Amino acid sequence: MSVSDKDWELLNAYADEELSVEIVETVKARIAREPELRDALSEIQEMKRHIKSGLAQTGPEKAKNNTSYSWRKIRAAAAIFALITAGLYSWIQYDQFTRANPENIHQAYSDKGYILEKTPNIVQVSSQYTGDFKIPDLSASELKLAEAKLYYVDGKEVITAHYRGMRGCRLTFVSVGSDKDLESSPHVTFKQSAEFLKGKWQSAHSDMTLIASGMDENRFASIARFMKYQIESQDRKKQEELRVAMEITYRKAHPCA
Image (cartoon, rainbow, N blue to C red; front, side, top):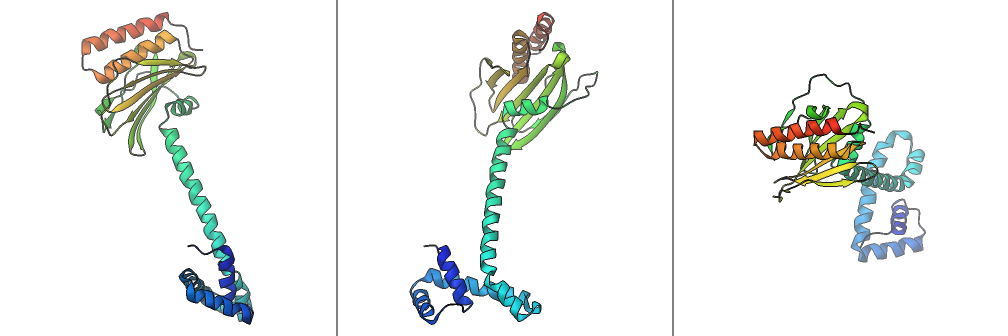
């Protein structure tokens, strides 16, 4: 059983010899039969010894006044620390969710400005699940790689890549690794909202998501199919066929909004 706040105040006053004779006798009787009170009193007395030793040079009167409130200050500081710890844990949990959530990742990339190089970047990362993972080249759809990252969130490997094109085209690829075997998806599943176009599929060890803002639907679908096949297959001929299809679709597509 924990000691109540009222009993902490009572024991603090008892240790400072501020109680009447009648109440002192009552407290002594309770301490004799309640182990929790004995342990709490020992903590209070030990803490007061440390405080008194630290205040020894401030004068006996000031030391006594400070000591009478010391335990309450310590308890308040402990409560504040607990609140800060809880808040920090909540922030860490939120940050981990944000850094593994495709929509939030896409929005974070979209809010940034980039100076893109004329030649496409060839980026390769050493992935835990896919070995040497090559970030797909989408130059056939006039999209340039702006940024790519590999990091870990709650033990899960996260690979992200963000592409930019003309007239505000923004596209983000997110791969979130899994420590268990997944069933590979035969096709990309497409969804559309007022804000995003989204394509999702699974590989043997990762959930993969492609998100775009303001992009022609046919162009987006051709990019998603190309990326899925390039990531999962070594069939160069099929990859080239899908790359050409992606380029042709781009030429017919409406400009990004």
